[in-house]
Length: 439
Image 1 (tube, rainbow, N blue to C red):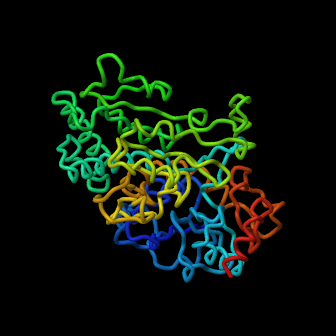
Image 2 (image 1 turned 90 degrees about the vertical axis):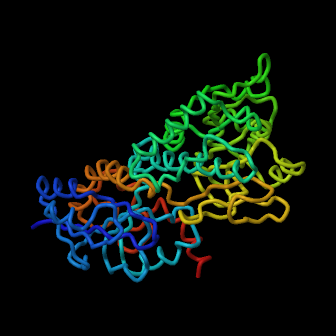
Image 3 (image 1 turned 45 degrees about the vertical axis):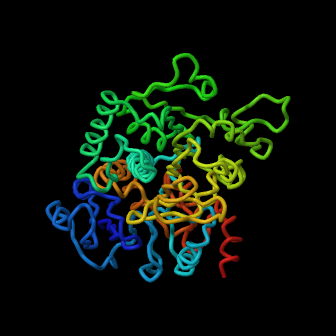
């Protein structure tokens, strides 16, 4: 008996063009593992229907024959089918209110839900992700937004020609455009009005590394956070470089008890015993790129009150926050909403605590696009599919008819099973309280 899986069209977001499985990898799974694959047709997907057909993949609206269905983003409630196993980014594990109705319907239909975000190794490290591509696209868009904001201020800068990531033919074209900006900075320097130009990265994981990969195409000089107050001494900052700082946890928080040294493991285990010290760096930053994973138990990097004080006396050095992590009122409290590609930025007004569309106004410009990897859809899909394909045979061959305990999924996958045959699995039963609140 052959195995069948479905690839859903992405219809939750109009800008979503990624795929979980590219045609070539689908063909490989069919040939090596005897897996029959059906892809729903899509007019916007970065890999066209014909590319799937040429790879020998059936293209059909109906995924009824497929017990396991793969997607990228959330599946609309009317499209959910009884008893199926769904694999996608569900955005439910923090109890996100906007997705509780979807999760409730998955449970009602007796479905199984596997979330890519929770596919982890024994140390909790994620194994299937788009993080680098969020960082790449996010930094390209951040440089675009910086150019636009400076132009609004009347400052001509080398960043004005930069487009958003989605406007380039591919990643290579975007990188070439950024390199040309770097050449201009080397040859002509930055405007005196924005020197020193200091870009701070909160975090050092996959997202941050992707963002730094773009910034490093420019003339960059990295300095340590502790150097910020004094690095302008002597001859002063240079006009032909951008200063880069990467902040770790030890730079961003300290124990509330002043007599205790910082300990990373202790911070993870007892975050409420720590407080943010990030405010001390803000007077020196021109751009802040947020790339950290944040939960409410952790101190915020930037509060609304801090922003209000910072902008009380006019325009400070900080002009822009590229919030790639994009948690609403999370680590960056003034990220008061997420944005989409056709309206990617807003100014946070600290006086009225509101978002002003565009780049005009008193306050930091916030870039908070929720699905940044979709701006580099082909490269992101190729990478993601290349990782995912190694897990698919185990998923499709698993026997989902028995108990969750007896289901012979690899532990890396089993950790990611949010719901099993209509019930939350033990590790995710805490979501019940969020489901109850949504009723």
